[in-house]
Length: 69
Length: 130
Image (cartoon, rainbow over all chains, first blue to last red; front, side):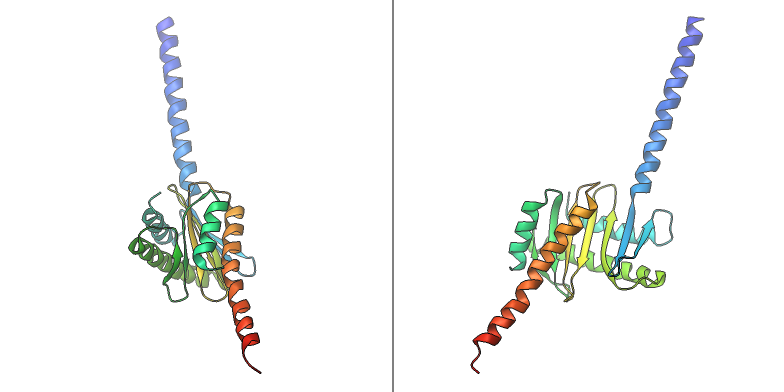
């Protein structure tokens, strides 16, 4: 009985750890975006998943790399 | 105020900014926080490429003239503000910056550079003999 409880506890712990890692990775991906603002105040957000995002984000990453954070 | 002084003030005010550069309408670097001019040049070239790409996306989206942009990545954020005379200011920050504050500081810096030009022109006009 105690062995079974231990196994259940470990499974629950591993499951929640995996879930939190997946959630963090997904949230981090969603943070990557490019917001374009026009002079009149209108805005277009190009986020991960949109067809233009890979090209724009790659260009932005390259510039940020140049700055060597 | 000249571009170098404006950048010095900017980095003193905004601790979020890691590097910044003022880029002329022709793509040349007017001032930057980089020690190395070559690195500043590569930075400006990259900014130019990104602005060109962003402009194409902006046009396709039907958005009027691009005034500013923010690119948020996992490594940090890149901000670009375009001035009225074709010059622009670009800055790199650490991840998750206070977006509104960074834009405000960049616009203020760019305006402080712009504002000196008409004043200097007025002074020259006043000094000229009638």
